[in-house]
Each structure stands twice: as C-alpha cells, then as structure tokens.
Image (tube, rainbow, N blue to C red; front, side, top):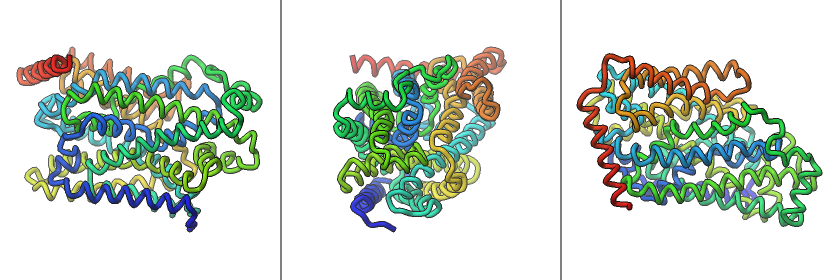
Length: 499
C-alpha cells in the first residue's frame, strides 16, 4: 500500500466521515431517526443532500469519461438532468413531504403507497419493496465499482482488495449514524464535489493558455467534439434528455423530501439545489471536454485514461495539482461515491426493516430492535452489491443507467399521479409499478431502436395507471379522498405563508 500525501489526505477524509457517523449515533434514538432523521432537515442540508445523493461517482467519473470520449454531444444528459431536477422540486417535493406525514407518517415509499391506497392485501408494499431491492442492488454495485477504481489508483491496491476497502469506508458511518450521518456527510461531500469540478477545468485552461486555446486544442484533436449533434439521432437526443424523467422515481432522492423539516423549506432548498447542480454538471462536462485537450497536449500522461476513459478526472487531479491538493480533489470523487452509496444502502435497509421485518415478522418490535435490524441489513445489502461489483470490467455509467431507468419507470408515474390525482386506485398503482419495472427489464435486453428503456417504461406505466384506475370498479374510498383534500389544503396554507 502506498502512503503518499494523496493517500494520507484520503485517509484523513475517511476519518472525518466516520467521526460524523459517531456524532450522529448520539442523535439516533429510534427507527424514525435512523431512516429519516426525525424529519428535521433544514433547507441547506435538504438541498445539498438531494444533490449529493443523486450525483454519485457517475458525476466525477461516468459523465467526464463520456464527454472525454465523444465530446460535447454527451452533455444532453446534463441538460435532461437539470430539467428533471427542477421539475422534481416543483411537482413532487412539497406534496410528498406533506402527504407522507399525513398518511400515517409513512417512513418509506412502500409504506407511503400502502397507506395512500389503503392496500389491505399489502401487495403494493411487497412489489414496490422488491423493485427497490432489485434495482438498488445494481445501483449500489455501480458505486462500489467507482470506489474500487479510486482506491486502486490512490492506494495502489488490487481491484478485489480495493472493492472491500471502499465498501467498508461507506458502511462504517451508515452503520453507525443512519440517516443523520448520511445527510450531514452529504452536505460536506456536495460542497467538495462542486468545488473540485470547478477547480479542475480551470486548472486545465490555465495550463493550456486560456479558454480559447483549450477549445482550439480540442478542435485539433477531433473537430466533432464541439458538435452538440455529432453522432446523435433524434432518438439518441431524446434518450439522453429522458434521464430527467428518472428523478420522479428515485427512492434515495424522494426520501430527502420526506425528511425535510416542513414543506415551507422547499422553495429555498430548490434554489440552493439548482445552483449547486448547474455548477456541478457544468464542471463535469468541462472536465471531460478540456481533459481531451490536456492529454492530447501531454500524451505521456494519458496512458491510464486511454485504458479507461472514466479515469479522466482522477488523472487530471493527480497531474495538475500538488499531491496534497490532489488528495482533496480525489476525496471529492470518494465523496460522490460515498454519498450516493450510503443513501442507497440506507433505503434498502429501511425497506427490509420497515416493509418486511416489521410488516410481516415482528409488527410489535421495539424501536431499539428495529434500529439494529436496520444496521444488520445494511451489511447484508452491501454483501450482495459486492458480488455484483466483483467484475472490474463493469462501467459505472452503464450500471447507473440501468438502475436509474428502472426506478424512474417503476415509481415516477405513480408518484406524480398519486400526488396530483385523487382518482388513482390501488389496482392502478400496482399495475403501473409492475408494467414500468417489467418494461425496463425487457427493453434493456432488446435495446430496440437504441432508445433508453426509461422512455417506454415511463410512458407505458403512466398509461397503465390511468386506464386501470378508470376501469377499476373499486374506486378510492371516502377516507382516501378526504386525506387527499386535506393534503391539498395544507399545501395551500404553505403557499399563503410563503407569499
């Protein structure tokens, strides 16, 4: 193992994150605290934890790597994500916060669906929990692959050892502090990610003689890298923009809305989140775009990037900066990986504990028992994700794409409709979730017309919910209608307070 200034900085960062977990341990008194932080997050923590939990290692590895390889045409993903994030804040954030508390203080998405639709059969809870566990196993694996690649470079470890080391680093503070630890560390990590993504492209431009000189260098490498439509078809552009649809169904993002102190913090949190997102996405695109110019001007430094294009930000960080600064910038990649992975592990833990253990095995389990079951399931989910991540040839972007599409198509339509339309029925919700999930699984295998599977999955799920709800003889009960109207009145009150 290598003990350079970079690795020492890296270890110092890990110690700080685990220390945050220890502090959060003291504030974790019950299961509500462990998986939702007691619903007491303010605007800043809510905003930055949404951003950090969303933008995983994909932001500092997958996106810069794609732009490095193909040029600015890959930035359509960033545009789609920015639009999707804004829509999620405006349409879902405040209503979901109010509705989950009004509907029997629901702690998880399956819990929310179960109470929202008075599902006495508990099929909604079971099916939605299975979908979460299925796609989060894939999503968590992407974070583990990213962290393993990082530890490979920083600590000069073999992939298998780096995989265990990287997973343990995240597992430690999630196990200890639960949701509060994850949210507090997300705030630190979001700031680091944004700062790193601004600094690295600026350093490249300074090295190559300014913005114009850097762009000309990119042009000399490949003029098509400056063309937004290069190699893109209409379906290709729509598929990249469609990443924005995924936001409506991501459990690890939606749970941040549920954990906010109240719906009144959402407008301020939205502004903070969007500013952070625009800077971060722009920096990630710039890192990949300018990275192609840097390594063409310094071909002797580009061997590691040529072997794996998703290393572009890593190599820029270690090449352009003093080792101590480079260590901080590389820690930003670890921050991105750990922030998302920790949220995913915690959501899986909450589903296994709340929607299986307490719902079917120990309905009267004590709060302390539930917290410890939650901690043990974090370990169990990590073990499964490690098995998926053992193949070092997995690309971070492809794993994220699959899971992102699965969640967006399965839960996005039902989340939107459950908050906006009182006519959705239990059977409509159940069919919609199943149709969305199955469409993604089947379409991913066929890859027809080169269309991203979230598009047919989202559309078919949306149609299925509406059609089944309209034809369903079992219409929403008076209690469901009353709760829906109560939520709308509360939201109107919030709007008046903010006016």
